[in-house]
Length: 324
Image (cartoon, rainbow, N blue to C red):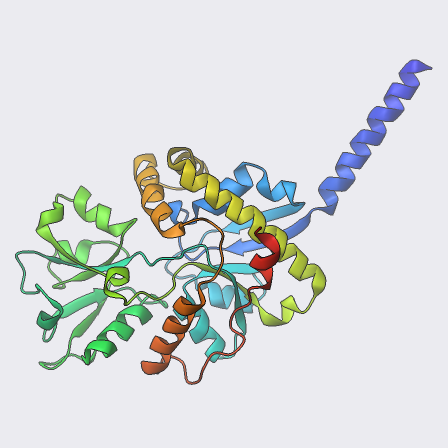
């Protein structure tokens, strides 16, 4: 009799556990780029069970050079995406009604770097030279900066020639461009690993110059937010994600290892990248700084990247509920 009761209890517990697993809410996250420490917070949240604690079953889809997160979510391939605000606002202007629900990256990591022995020493030297920048939405901060300087991006003596830069540092090494774009947490260190010393490079840091536009944020489709169940799911997703970011910032080496376990390349590079990314996360509350949003939107308007003011392009409701 005792064995029967124990067996029944075990069966009930197993059934309950199975039911709980089946009941977990599915969320698909589309990243902006390949698996790397730029997205460590999400991999950490999954690895440490933070999503599971919020009854979420999260699938993380890496990006790549031929993947536009805005197109993925518009086509139903993701519930939430990581993208830069300029790309998000540009997509919204074209009819993909993206809404920023959280802003993990408070500071920009974008920089332009030039060899110290090259022709470019200051912004005044840009004119007539070739500057590299990535496209697929990454070019918008660069164009906004050139517009601020009054420089044409069509080439010629009175402007700059824009090189559509590959996603590496070869254009500088091979002297295809006088300056190239890098991220503080990634390509800058590729140049260092390639033999450049910090004193060999002149660095134009977007944040230091006040030209930074908001980078990695979390975006969903506006109509989905009208569903209270989806909104609640996003509150739980953001809460767990920011818990992951906080853990990653406090434990960069472990976070780097987790990224590698999920497909990231070069453990030492991922650990170093995480240390640099932590500087951009700040206090890991994910809350949007409205002044930074307005600066980003205005820069896009000035450059005519968007045709009209972006109304309804963000909400603070999710982070207000998710973060104490």
